[in-house]
Amino acid sequence: MPLVTTKEMFEKSMKEKFAIGAFNVNNMEIIQGIVDAAAKENSPVILQASSSAIKYARIPYLRKMIEAALEEHDIPIALHLDHGPDFETCKMCIDNGFTSVMIDGSKYDFEENVALTKQVVDYAHSKGVVVEAELGKLAGIEDDVNVADADAMYTDPEQAREFVERTGCDSLAIAIGTSHGAYKFKGEAKLRFDILHKVKELIPNTPIVLHGASTVIPELVDLCNNNGGNIPGAKGVPDEMLHQASIEGVSKINVDTDLRLAMTGAIREVFNSNPEVFDPRKYMLPARDLIEKTVSHKIRDVFGSSNKA
Ligand code: G3H
Ligand code: 13P
Ligand code: ZN
Image (cartoon, rainbow, N blue to C red; front, top):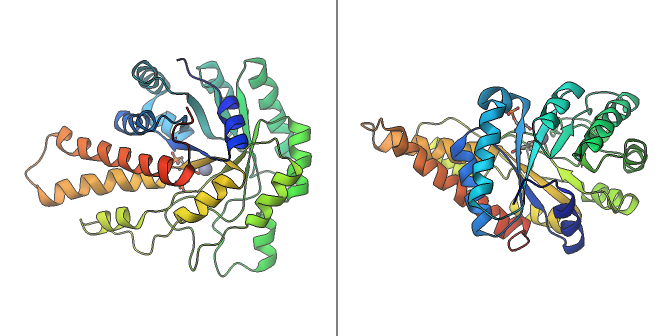
């Protein structure tokens, strides 16, 4: 089937209470690992590329590799721009076949974010493309941030309702305590499910997105560290919390860091135990396999999207 937008998969996710994994892609092995897992699980999937991933892989390559995935597999796949920084980047992706774009106006004040998001929504909708927007700040919320500052970072549910009404965005990323990368929490992991519940109460028909949602899987961190890596004290969002989020109103869960750890860990292990290896297929194959295994686990055991294609 051709690329799809996220509209139908999100409708199903809200009705049947599961989440769809949105996985960041940069190269062929990552794309193959993700779509092979999604196809085996018979799950819809979102492949997303950031503007730096686009710069690295280049749009024609990304597009053609994803076309190849569509040729091989009969599951719903959406191609999404992750963290679109401005109107021009969103337009470039829309004009190049992306079916979904994110405009990340979270760095601006509320009114500027509304205006920029609305501009992208108007263009995207005229081309049949859907738009994810963001409200709230995802900056790492650490133990030593005072309560007032931390509260200012979380999404305000009332503002979320006004934002969606005024922009017409199709989905909304909210800040409830996650952050990007491998160091999300200093102490215990904590998410503000109360904010998620309030947002879902006020805008029940808007699909909600969770960024910064890697588990930072301890086995993958150990695989890196035991093979010459140096990633001490890394910590992410536990599987149980992500599962809770997926049944309590989150429709899209973003994962990049866990894929980076899987790829790096697998490659490090080959290099460490077989220093004579220099054929890239000898280390890219285990890397692709570990990405597939990681994605399968998330789809099947955490997000609940198996057999929802
Ligand atoms: O949220 C950011 C994603 O992990 C993409 O990161 O901009 O380094 O490609 P990147
Ligand atoms: P992680 O860094 O937790 O994988 O988050 C990825 C993300 O939010 C991409 O937009
Ligand atoms: Zn993100």
